[in-house]
Image (cartoon, rainbow, N blue to C red; front, side, top):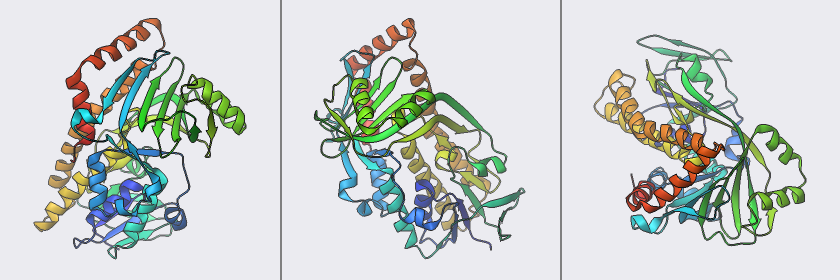
Length: 390
């Protein structure tokens, strides 16, 4: 089989790329390890995705946004950042950018379901589930994939979109800069007594990091980052004991709390590929850039990659040029690095400082937050970045 494009990984980024390329005269094959039922009805995984205005605009163009249930979309009006036990907060307000909201929060489960539904309607996209790659054979002029069932695919372009721990990236001989933060993130939904007012929290405590992502009603997605053993202990607590401990960890600022979902844990590891492209191949989503979640830019970067790669490929295709040639892929890599590298590095530095509990770092943390609160141009710049349409 010789499709134009093979996409490895039917996660949200891979599915969105398939949708973006569909209808343009290209044949697309997607390879996915999971059963198709797991894509059609994805399980709740605890993750809520903060979407910028630009990401929402792209999902609307791809036909995903109308498929999202209203109850799975929550307004993210403003954000605030706390340090240590202090009540002082750096506040980022949407009105500073002339907007009503910074963005929206959408359940990852809902995005995955909508993406699958959108792609399942594309006649030019073939989805092969329960499928694994046995080997990849690559040369300057071609790339071949040998599947476990012996089937051979020879696309014009191979796209790896199979997570920050991408096996496809490794098989292609592309390394990645991995940043293991040595912590685990626990995510769940909780109901609480006090009103969140649609304001997100990032709270760099001493010995822990907390985040609050406001959902609809009196519920929020709570994110707790601790050493792995502490997370394991919390997962074993019964629901009432867990809720009481979360109340204490939030310093009772949310009043009484109640667990209303399952709990999920994820290791905190950042990833940045040393190359975004190779001979007839490109990386996308977390396989290219896997962000620490503190700046909530992971999937937004994935969608930026979808936009940049689809634009580069479709421009080449419209001119009857080779979509797997050096020029369109080089353009994609250059633009993706420009869009992601500065914030990736800044995020890692921010995490290093605001999770350092030594006294000098604590003093610097507090001072930095107060200085930032007084810098209106900085806060306006952040708000404008989140509310920009593209």
